[in-house]
Length: 180
Image (cartoon, rainbow, N blue to C red):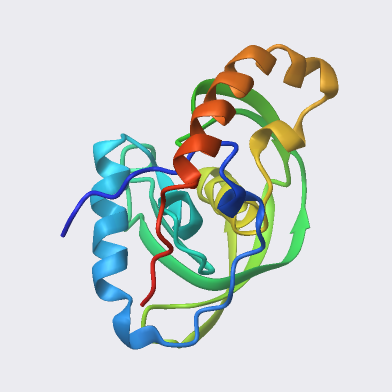
């Protein structure tokens, strides 16, 4: 297991729609590295493209938020099938350090996904987990929290975004694509 560098706002890989996972046999190390990286950065979710990997894969651990049940998840080739309800919550993002914004999202979702073994699932989620899933699915589709807020809200973090973007663009020129 190893830590991976978090890719930041401005890096082109974060605006791509990620490729579907076809070969599930080589994901174990990547998933382990992603969990190590997420924990090191004190996150609750991490998409593969946030560590420079163009794959439809994300992980979530909301144990610190909801300690009552198993709250560690791996989602592959995810698609939100349905959503309804509405909730507002302040969100942060590992790819946009130190920026937090109030984001409106559906309260309930139905997600179609595969697990690490390639088995298909369709499940309903709500609350913090539904919000985290939507945040990570957004990443896999090239969408950020700043894309989900008003222009006025986005203007409040414009300076921070420009600083993060400038560094990320220069770093992206030297990053190698991860290949399974």
